[in-house]
Length: 234
Ligand code: C5P
Image 1: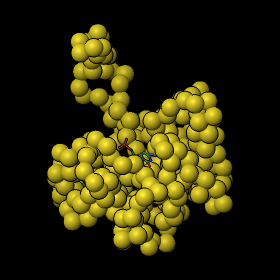
Image 2: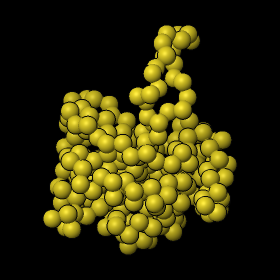
Image 3: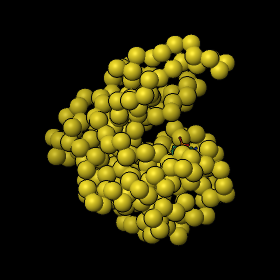
Image 4: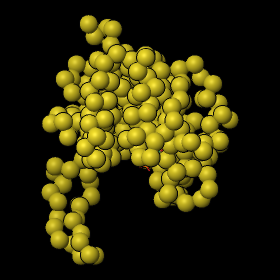
């Protein structure tokens, strides 16, 4: 039974990267001589288990056609949406003729270019028989404070706090239903796991690598270049 289950990638890449500033969207900024999105897709394409990867692109995106990965046989594109969840849903719709309801979908942020193929494969291996699916995550090392109007109002018990990373891996049918249902109910979901949580599901956690950072601010670019270099020697 498990042998017929396939794996599909979804990469939301339609954001404008407001916190980065500048004219070029952050997924097209160069790190170590290549755009962020090219790095990200190369790392996912290194995982042979992906049957195809659907990339959601912004309507105004004029950079995509020049990306070497744009011509890869295993890559398809979809028009991105207003929010990240809309872009993920559009990519799932793009895959509907290809994917079965029981197939696994791994959603990975375009901006997480340092993800390692081995972390993606370990998520696939660890959750292959899981009833719900789950995500790469990291236990929080910082003490977290609740803040209101500039003052601390409480300290969160960090023993229970993990930071959600991507990929996040769920069944095609379940994920699509959960995202569509959240949209119908007007609920904001910032990742796939939260859409599943709204359905009463309990996604699993697989510990990921701390270098799987999301490029968000300008200082993340040299940090990503440093991690890439370190990974080459790992
Ligand atoms: O802005 P943030 O870094 O949280 O976005 C996470 C990912 O979601 C990025 O890869 C971004 O390109 C993508 N995104 C999208 N469509 C949007 C907003 C964000 O595909 N409308």
